[in-house]
Amino acid sequence: MLKLRYQKKLIEAGCDEAGRGCLAGPVFAASVILPPDFEHPDLNDSKQLTENKRDELRIFIEAHALAFAVATCSAAEIDEINILKASFLAMHRAIDQLNTRPQLLLIDGNRFTTYQDIPHHCIIKGDSKFQSIAAASILAKTYRDEYMLKVAADYPAYRWERNKGYPTKAHRDAIAKHGATEHHRMTFTLLPQQLKVL
Image 1 (cartoon, one colour):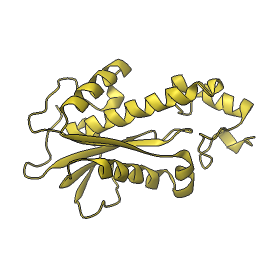
Image 2 (cartoon, helix red, strand yellow):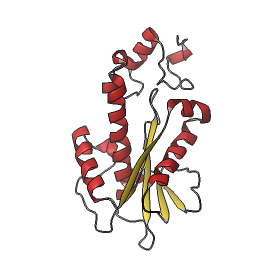
Image 3 (cartoon, one colour):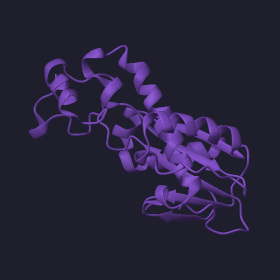
């Protein structure tokens, strides 16, 4: 059972990212502030849900959240500053867009770069422990999947509509055959043994 709050006095925003382990596409992050009476029996870590259930929950979260925002860091930015810093930057950008200022940030994972003067707590597997982080994981995942579906139409060989940019065999086979695209993260190991990417 996911907890609604870490504490009761401060306005909490849950934060999570999606796409950190992908070979292509941006990393997406979301930040969500839930009302004190928020409830949905199916809310969980996005990885534990079906695609249809995630889409259904995204609509519910957006309709009932006090505030939410989604932001990205591009593949080029990931290559420039590294994926960890890019994940934090995407979270910062999401928090920037919230129309309610949080007083406490709940971060999925074990590390974070402090955002302005707002205190934060890093929670390992937080998306399976706290509702606001689970909600953020669902928004980040669904928005990212939606983006990858759009760019997949321009690059059908890479099957992004199925693998969403993750390192599947089909994706790597396509990189070996066709080379990398503008959406690929060139600092990642696109091919085993670092075979040359054209």
